[in-house]
Image (cartoon, rainbow, N blue to C red; front, side, top):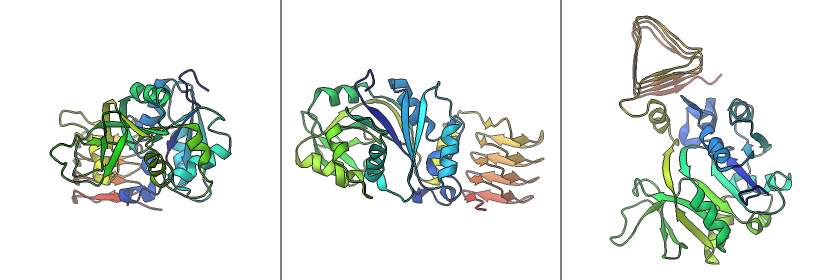
Length: 318
């Protein structure tokens, strides 16, 4: 068990990423490139920053690409172990499989982080509450950024989760909280999971809530979902005052115009091409005079000469 009192940390990165289609048909959602590295990099760096020197990442969808993306992330010498699933196990089944493989230690709690968000969180309150309470599961929570878009969590005064509500307008007396995809799980709960496909809410949250042992604690920091193609574009281009980022392997003609965009690996922007608030990466080509606005182009595809592409998400699936 680590010095911080936890046996292991696992990053969930195996899913299909259906809401991210068509981009996730080419690249797994946690492996999509951002200016700072793959999406999953922030979860891995978060774990290392807490003090974990070994992280488990599960894979299934486009597993080779997911593992390749993980292998290219610099996390200061910490070890990353892949738990590949032959068939998709679901979030709870993936944890059980990693446990059976001996990847989650044999005693002490486990920290679980979703691999499809950009995280900049201070998790000390989460770790401390979990170790000091009788929570079976402890959720890290944030003040809710948009209760009408994502589920709402309600805590009582003792930090017990009383309700997990569907998106909607909060009640007048409600303090809505948001789950950004980080939780601590007690060893007994990990050991109880069957090695069959299943999801975390059914196998961990609802049983813990029934025992009044599903806890939550508000943490501080930043979180950005990368769930849809538009979420991904926004994560890449950033705030309005951000400059463009051009990968060292990309080619941008001197007469091309690139504003607040991410020009990723192998991309080519030819003469008089215009790219605004967009992502062009993984070998995509913008021909002379083409204009790409608030769009994403990934893979071996071409924006034809003088073509206008506006608010589109394209990926070339070989």
